[in-house]
Length: 256
Length: 321
Image 1: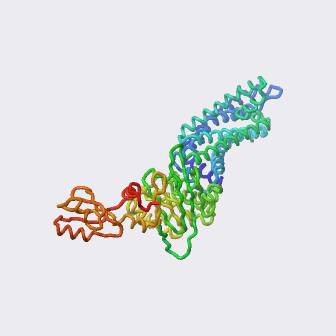
Image 2: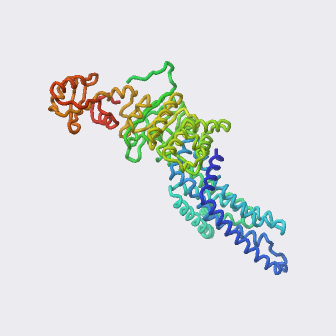
Image 3: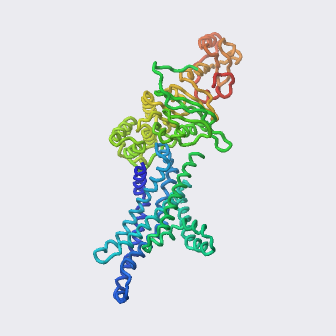
């Protein structure tokens, strides 16, 4: 049932121009960045070889490419998520799902899976860029794997937040802007608040703040470090916002 | 209250709602309604806009939680086991829940999936719903490109594709042309043979044409509940519209045996209220000829919902429940 809803929403994303526009721009921006860094790398290579332990292609080209992807997710996810619930409520098609023998949890998970499907397609396309050189150079697959896992988890966290904001309004644009605002706030908070609280000795609050800093939790994975605490924080954030979304839709039934 | 009893078999209760109420803040949209629907029965839900019909239907389909009261569908409590109960319901809301970017066939297939129609039967179920609603020719068209009438039909097809026991239709004939309305009414009649149907409308002839029973809502309350036959008797023949070119005094009309009251209803037109069980038409015609009132028309007044409401809400002592 979750897959039925996921399939429907994924299909509907591809029948609207938004998915195509986002895919195009992500490819253009990241493709350009990738080629530019690749070019720089080729020029620097003679000097790099003289270093005792030179950074390779993965560190100098692949990692920054994925870092750009992480930044782009920040506004791509809200744009892709905005219609999922807001527009269904606006067009009054949500009734179709809520009248069918499906639980609200399944509806939310279906929509979340649709969004993740779309984001994994984007990630796969981005991953193909460095991987296309796998025959020409030695790639650090473990580092790439760790970064991709981190990106997927971060994208999932962004998705859960964006889905929740989409359930709060019936205007897709408001949903997109709202989700972008919330995510931006989380990024900024991740930069300062957690460290700040830690130095002041407010450990509990710092932990709390870290759950709400998906980008900060992505960082260890982005460096190839499988930090189980950061992964747990990301998963917690995902579950938390999916639960908020379910509650919000339940409340709609209770409040009218 | 008489019950219809068309067949000897006792029909099973498919939908029952007990003491259903819904408040929005201080406003009570639906106030303590109780209804029971048996298999093979078509129930008409009548009421003016804002009477609480849509709110009631949202509660009966599990889209809105009642403030108090309970609903059970085929013996399953809608509030305790919503997923199980909803499997027995097909619902057409006021605004048909259509995905404009899907083709009709794709959309109905999706709905069948959502209602857990098994894969092998899905194709047949979709085809059947399409042919029942006259959609076979537009199966490959995008819903967004269809006319309002066709979209309404897709909405109805959506409610019946999984052959639910209870079909709840909120104003199903809105936006249809007269031919389509006739088709849809015939379809509802046909479906009514094997399913239970609740149909909301504010068009009285529609209810008379297709329903077995009628419930009238007003200000969130059920003000009338009876069979169609009883409803017809309740108000038909009780008012005559009489056109006289040389009208007498109203008191003269009112003095005719069987007439309870006479009032002017326009230029040379009179509404003559008559007592139940009497028919003074012949007397009026005879009197008109005798006293040269120059009768040019006499007919039972066209009754519409408004009349029924006027009757139900302004007169006391009627057998309103």
